[in-house]
Image (cartoon, rainbow, N blue to C red; front, top):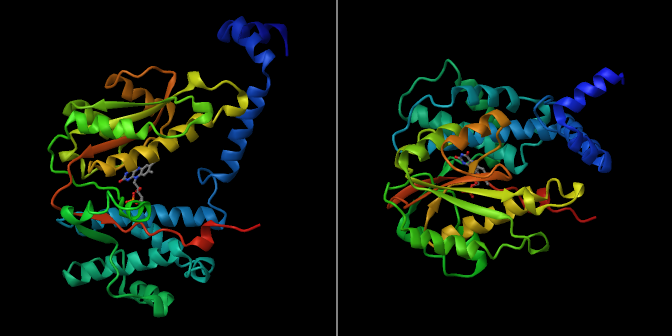
Length: 338
Ligand SMILES: Cc1cc2nc3c(=O)[nH]c(=O)nc-3n(C[C@H](O)[C@H](O)[C@H](O)COP(=O)(O)O)c2cc1C
């Protein structure tokens, strides 16, 4: 590298940074390696493996499930998702895996979507033909279920009846709720839930996670607008939690992703604690680019050392509400004995 380029780099990033990187050069190699692996194996650049195809199918069918949640169905919803599913569900490879949990449920969601429109005399033939419906039923064969529903209806009184029961019943009863009454959850109850979540184990007990409560509707709406994954449900969301993990507590290059793990663990514990305290909630994805993430700092004052892990709208559940089926994988798809 010529001296003039070296000097220019020095000027831009500063001598201190250069010295620090010289003493820990592996920071570059490791972050670069993370980037290469993400480039190769995520679905950002390639959709060329069975798992990548399955990822797209799940994204699409889950979006359709979410559309089925609305009490007043917006007919012909999620058209682009349906078109994407048509494209992927006709692959021979996918057909041959139609017994896999996520593929099977995708075919079932498609049948449900068609039947819902047929039952209500809504014409969708421009993007979903009777032949395609027939084909999906044929693929499902004996697994076709006319009673299948992509959503589950709950009465609030029943929904929370397992919160004091054993872990099996408790864990099976937690669900993401997106329909709130708009009433505010008392701060003391939120505090009790967050306190309970502090039981989360963390690396060397460093406890780097923090929870910010946003109570003002204008900020809540702005954050939800940036978040973008809850459109259609935001009207009655008046409170939300922002979960972060502080990078100050991580001290080796090997730990460069540890704060996501600790934050993720805190998140799960928080979701359970909220459920235990009968606070309806739905975690909302904060997988943002730098540019998108910057926008949130206009609405919440969070030190830049902290990584936002998740946004969690909270509230009081309506007396009756629906949740997505969100079919889980079966054990054989998850556990591998080596
Ligand atoms: C990190 C994370 C991000 C999520 N982001 C969203 C979101 O942006 N919008 C949404 O409606 N649901 C979101 N969800 C909820 C998932 O769709 C839901 O957890 C999944 O379908 C399983 O359903 P369950 O939580 O009811 O068991 C998110 C869940 C997690 C854990």
